[in-house]
Image 1: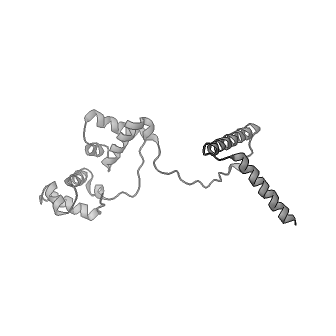
Image 2: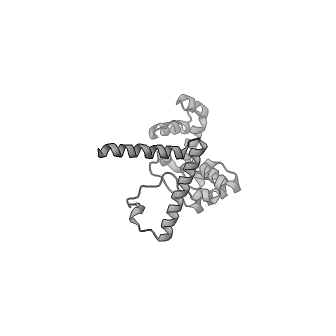
Image 3: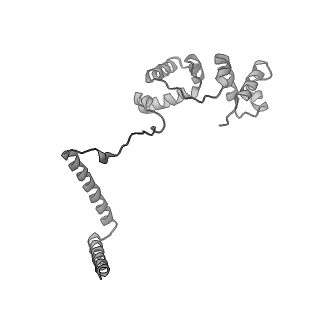
Length: 182
């Protein structure tokens, strides 16, 4: 999707308002891929003025309850995403479509999930500094043994003879230590 700057959008909307053409003819005249884009700009301009055509660089966050209210209104009225966005003073109708998709897939939990990657914390997350209880130490050791066991099972499944390999490594390391002592 192409990004259009504020001046370009305003020129297209002003051309429509001045009666220089309809959505389709203005889309062709200004080389815009879809006449629907022109219609969205005109509706947004009529609802919010010039600020609706400006690019937003700061993300606004909405509460889960607000999102549910917007979706409830959309489902009850059957209005378009654009009309619902105008009614709730939301600059991007696609936000509502995304909320609807998340709500349909995951329910209310989908609306409450934070977007993007979690921020990097300045705290030191080194768990070795924390003294583990005896029970936690045993659980950790148990988990490490499970991982080791799974690894050995994989090696056996691949046809690798672990015992002969270990004997061979021990034999080589003892020979190397004898050479180093001479």
